[in-house]
Amino acid sequence: MLQIQSEQVRNCLQHAEDCAHRAKAEPNPNLQRDYLMMERRWLSLARSYQFSEQLDTFSTHNKSRRKEADEALNRLSEQAERMIKNSP
Image (cartoon, rainbow, N blue to C red):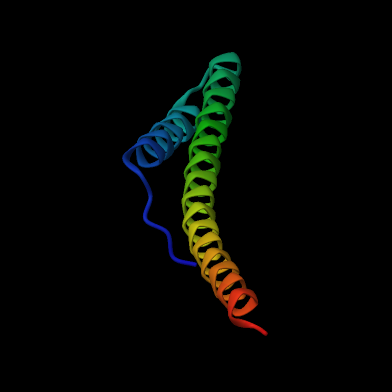
């Protein structure tokens, strides 16, 4: 499924990419490790944003579907009541 990335996710991915480039260019192994750790944290934050957005989309879709189901159930209930009232 094609998804449009939010600005928050794009920013996190950009920061992660920046950290990866800095790690490659950094001669100090300790700083290089720090940049790689920051890259992983930015990627983790991006995944968190993505999950949150997917959950919101899922919840919104299900709320809509539930409303449709409730309306259909109400219509059926009304029809059943009318049928019972009109039966001999």
